[in-house]
Image 1 (spheres, rainbow, N blue to C red):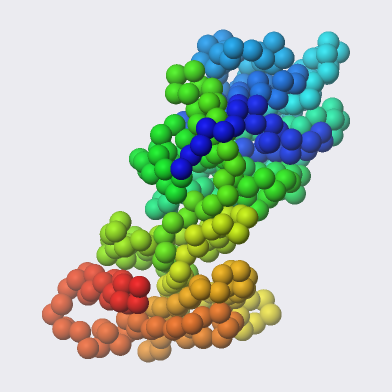
Image 2: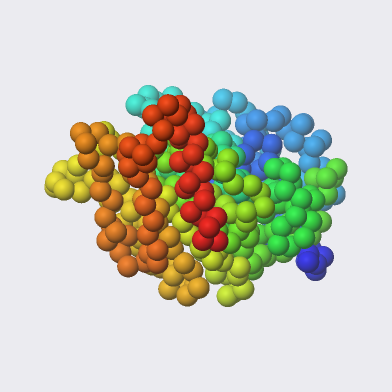
Length: 407
């Protein structure tokens, strides 16, 4: 149950990890509440703060987020377009009048550069490096809000992970010191979680890129005042499903949606990618009070036409992917002895008369049970008059049946 035991000033728990000279990112989907969180943070730290609002005017920002105190310490600049050069000039001008401790940028993807770059990712990386330089030059903490891609919304859990940061393509530059992700269960019509009601509840998720081990931060927002009513730190997992299914391989994304249709919301089953699983499992370890999954299922697809040999020869990308997952699962099993790992090797229709081989040893010694579904073998025994689409539906059902039969 949630307890109203802390006060809005506890946002300093988050602010305290934002030290001078650091570049920090808070990511969230559009409309999820990034600006509300940032503005509350600026008010509650009670320190001079420069707030670059690139999406809303200064008047809109003040009208929508009207705190009862602390606004006098916030300098709002709504100049657009905004570049690193313009930002530095403005910071120098503000510094002559009074020092400041924090710089907030709302939001990162709205910044651009006058220089030409081969792609947007390179431009954004250069901007991030420039922001880090500003943090060091002015000896302040820079907090940049960032939009997230739609990938999080494609997952059943809707919980964002680090690679969802928009336009980064999963590669966060080393100059970024800390990344937090904003998650709002109610936004996705999730009414209950392990804490109880999610009404007006927002969660700041920790990621593997963090500079302070404060875990997940949970707070309640007053819907109309846009102010934090109370604030707590999470010690248990957001993950409640007992069975985790991880698609692996080149055809995994294409097949995943069809097989997911064979499951219902009552199956206590959740789908996620391997990176997502490892991050979420780390959340389960907070203070030893966790509710981890009991089973992990890896559905491993391969396509002979897309096998790519490494420059050194011999190893396919699928092999390297399986090896990496095996290493991560070995870590997880060491932390939770009750975790069972299954692998379903899904062999597609053969080309050249031979199905691809997915070796058991690719995963190391972490797999408890192996299962095989061979499309080629099933095709040879199928009714020749059976429409291929119906055949695929039956195969999807067979894969789902293996999982359900072992739950």
